[in-house]
Image (cartoon, rainbow, N blue to C red; front, side):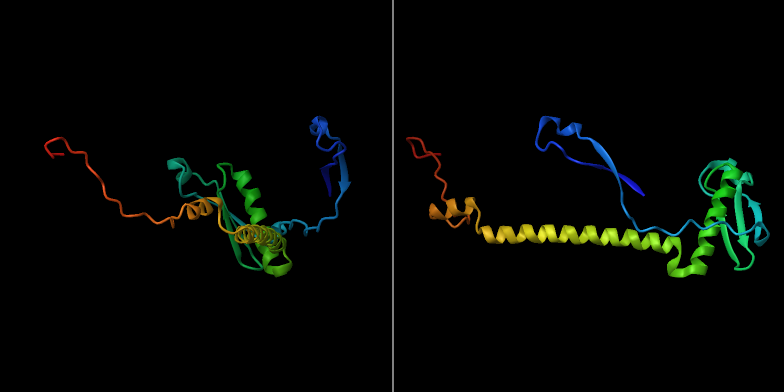
Length: 175
């Protein structure tokens, strides 16, 4: 697997945007190969009418594909597109994945990919927790904010005081 990495040769310069690109080989964990569909003699294929959104056309054409893997009894149905040939291809991919999951369990491609995604999500969540914990610690170490210091110097506690409103009165004593 090759990735394209930027290597900085001018740091903090105007020309930093025009950095050269270099490619390096990075050893990534290889995923299991995509499972191949079972042989045709192990598959029972049927074209059925679709259902769901799409109006009358989808309900009256036999473009949905239903495959049954005879040895395991797994049944999959695909009506992803309006095209029967594309649905056949998609149904075979689904069936291959389901059979792989059944035969290999935790070693199947779907399980390995799911585990990799879970590790990435857990790592991102852990990084986020560390970041916000560090921010909280910095806030606690900094002490009270500047606004609270100024208010305390003026002698107020920051709580609203009860004030008496004075209404202006005229010469007769009427407001």
